[in-house]
Image (cartoon, rainbow, N blue to C red; front, side, top):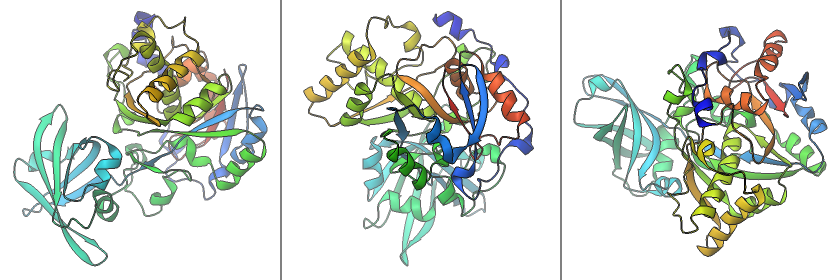
Length: 407
């Protein structure tokens, strides 16, 4: 099965997306966006605020509650050269919650823009918070591929790294919008339920939800649960190899509370994932449970789902409920109230979905791993869906319209 999936040609997942179909800004009212409906091979459309009309009774919707951080830091050298440091993932401390609480120093894996102008030395900038002047320094420690380990230090322990980012960082909107971040993006590029800081890109399927839609979901007796997957910059990384075998998936941080895992287990067969990040989180849980079945003493690092694990594991013998129960037992054994690990899972045609029965998602870039995931879910019928969206004036990508998909 692995071989068949690995040999998928990415060119088979290409389509023509005119620039004018890419939504550069969101609609004034989030839930007025169009909603494409796909079920049993048939396509229709509605308005997002009516999504509750199409959700099966007894469903459990799972949302990614990550919050986008202002991850781009702009420095200027004495020579006038501008250097951009894009914070991707915390290294010291490695935990997101802890790194944002630091008051003197922390280090991150970062991308560096205009790197050729920063050969050596420490970059500095002044950050003003509540009329207090703070000196923020950045030092390049070492390089790993196209990323760099950057240590940040600052001279006022009264302020956390989170406060420094909020005061001076720039929100990293997607590169395909071909525009600078605007003040409005600080609100519109966050879901209304975002809570846990750490993403460098929004889980954009959630951008359509309003308090009114969420209240309507509750009123219809449909369950809501939250997980956390911090979206990395790799989500925008195109597949450049001819086949997906040559594409390395980015690793992303996952955090799921024990009671959320229990609810997902108890509602197996009724799970609707809001966004591809929620899909990847929920499906990864299954393989973590399989890992624990094979190795009950596994560490959190050993629970990380590797890219091709779903295609290589002998997993058919374990039910989703059994897999999730293994995680619950693991958490109880370690007296932990949440599972904290990571995933590198790639979901592509040939993948067998274990838990997710419906997906709320936007329209994705050509030749992207996200489009591969959608194709896997709709059993290869993605062209029918995308042709309809293109012919019926749907808006594409992060600020675009939405879809509700059932196999």
